Length: 478
Image 1 (cartoon, one colour):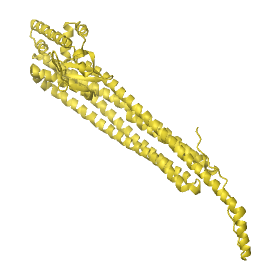
Image 2: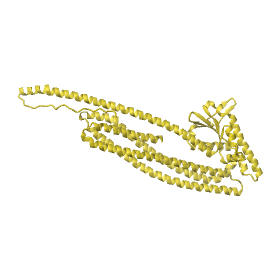
Image 3: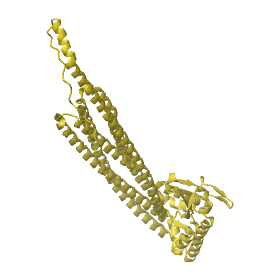
């Protein structure tokens, strides 16, 4: 969006400057140039109207692209739900068939969403072709404006034509041409980015389908592997890393291999530290207490299941108490202002849901310890809101830069007006000197010349043209 704002601002600024300069030159022309000026103003009006329509289309395309991103997020969430359901597969035949049925339904939903995304991609491609037509219209308008501008400039004050054309070319024509070239390049970049994003969207859809087909075969292997402490710890960190990468926060994060703070009580290595607006730090810690959770799913009777549930809830509470005792907000003050609270990320939604079913007061207990319990979907929502906040800050910085560029452009325009008025003043002085020379020649030089001609017996008629009465007009504010 910042690039689009800069792009539209540049177009409007260039057209306004071209219109003002054309209007200035139009004022200094004879009455016979009124028709050309009217046609030029009409052409400028058409160009402004085209620019307005183009801006609306660009905003609509941005909105559609955001909608596609939302749909892609929903597709990924659906895939995450499928993986969570598959993790709950038990050894019993009936539960396995139920999980397979759930996965099949999720795949059907993904295929349906893929068809919808393909249709939307075709619509975007059609709008890109329309956008190319708008670009050609702007190029033609630029060429017509430059042609008429040169035509008007060539008819002004023949005595100072070369100097005036040189000054106009350096101050107006070349900057205007450069602005239009920059606009054309930005259009090409925008088209290229749109094509790349559509390709990435199609590739992501294919990847989702492939992954969904592979989930069923990998579910049993994942269940066995996640019982290893090292594997499940690393698996939780990888899931956290992917979520941060998906919402666009990976460049604002430091992971445990980068954050290492030594204190009197020992070394502190949080899994992830996110830098948020206001130079504050948010601590995210990933835990995967899923051994007892898997035991509960695979229990063959209610007694085993009840024992596994108690053990699972005990481990979740233990993680909450451990994070609360670490007091990251106080111990990591060397990193800056740390948010007084830690996000505890549990990568298996079913594991957290089972603990909450067993103890409905678990969330309140965690809040009292300044711990926020999250699973992939809820963490994704939290981080997405945080990402939007960061993006808003970057947009504000871009808007400030655009404002500064507009101020600089205005200063340069005022400088051009001053120089242009100086040219007019020099022309006025030249006109005055010429008229004085003509008057002196007509009143003194020519009579003496005729007298010499008569004495020499010559009868040649010599005359000097009358002075120039035209007055050079200065550019006035308004």
